[in-house]
Image (cartoon, rainbow, N blue to C red):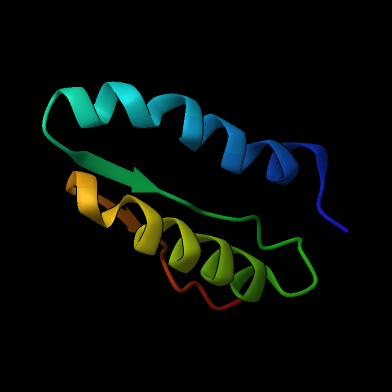
Length: 68
């Protein structure tokens, strides 16, 4: 189950999408807490999905692969 902050992450990115598209692109950086049970899996899958969806608008979605 996602925490409150993580569950709002996709909605914040989608809210920023029209503004980033209008300016010709941009970068979204997704990161997670080390306290999560498996921080990289959820953030990686979410970010990969967003990257595929936002690529046409020249918006890159990045996620650091952190190891505890």
